[in-house]
Image 1 (cartoon, helix red, strand yellow):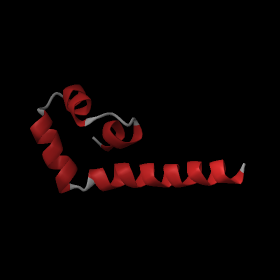
Image 2: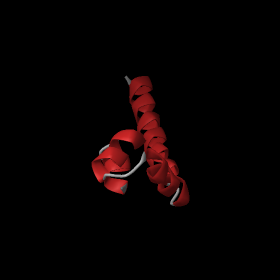
Image 3: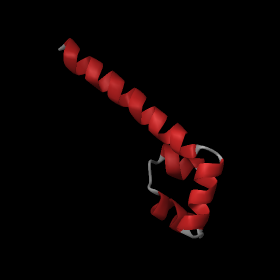
Length: 57
């Protein structure tokens, strides 16, 4: 679940389909294990690095 949703950066519908489960069940686990925070926490870090590189040029 973590590999599909966070590391491969797939959305909940595609991830759920690959796992053979409903989107609602997948989202239950996303909320239960705080996977959204992990996924978008990495996104924010990437954006901060990207913005830093833009201002340095």
